[in-house]
Image 1: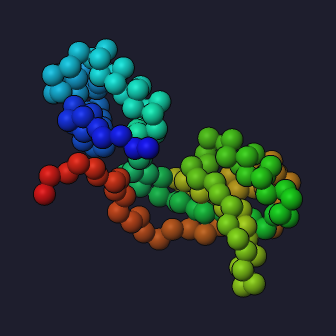
Image 2: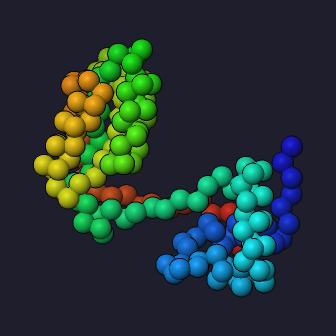
Length: 160
């Protein structure tokens, strides 16, 4: 059964749903803002994580600003019995930022997807061949993005 969060816990969520400051000890600053010692904040964060209230901390790279302007979703046609193993293999590559399975359609036979980023299309194409060799499946296509849509995280306990 869900439990009610304390005001301190709500304030912790508010702070950590935003960007972490780019400094050597970002949790120290947050602890000061919350009126806590850094060790206490870290203990509370670990408890919230153990309870499944805060599942993870993530980072969103603005890949286009970092010069990675070629962004491709590589779609594969893989036999159903081999999708899970191929997906695990693809996901093990550090260059793969997203990897997932989708149902096929009569007009779209691709069922395994991996997203990669590169400095140019040629780099993505070389990587796609390397990934295909790793999983032993060569029926794939590269779909390049034409625009980056707004990336925004969920916001909780926001005052109106």
